Length: 65
Image 1 (cartoon, one colour):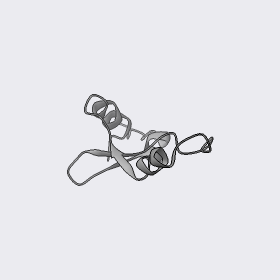
Image 2 (cartoon, one colour):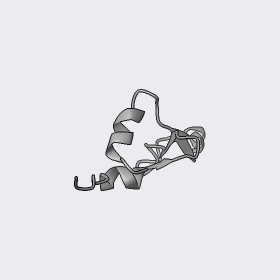
Image 3 (spheres, rainbow, N blue to C red):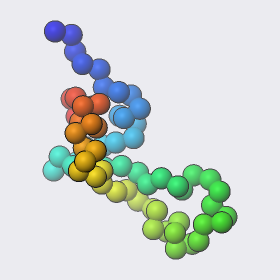
């Protein structure tokens, strides 16, 4: 059997934690920041976890992670 390929877009966007959960970055922090409140931008900092309903599809995109 040939090796399965990892989707390169998913590899750039997600990291697998040691516990097996998936880490993702927050959206809505790239541009048009002037109309967003300081509180909103502050709360978009850092990373978040992927919801449980989406984890199976991400694991399928990253078979060796």
